Image (cartoon, rainbow, N blue to C red):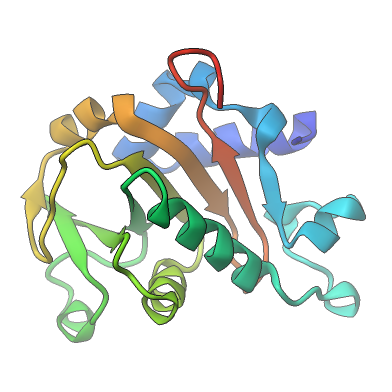
Length: 189
């Protein structure tokens, strides 16, 4: 469960996260803050805030591996996939020609793509590629199929939000991230 301050930070984070954040803000009532999980779990138990990163003297290792396990578990159930927003670079930036992570494009914006067949190494690589100020959207598949390099519109993504299962945000200092499930239409997360 997130504190009031953490919940406010998530909402502020979304307000500065471009079109994806705006779409999620319009659906903020569906975000189940009471079921949110902060990684690493050890830091959460001590009351440390994911949004500030972890103090050097209290550095907890395992947040990335815990988060990877959660994402892998979710990708393997319910035929899910996820997008992770690239916030630093755009589609035609020269450095992106060397990027190996599967991605789709929304105009010049880049969304890394993870699917059920993504292995642990690909998941870790994608998390680090998305790195700072991460915004992840986890969807139930519902017959959506994407190939590396596909182009989408924000309108298509907004239509897919009815299948949104979870959102993850965080200032990724190699550890701190918050995973927030979405209430299902029948009232269960």
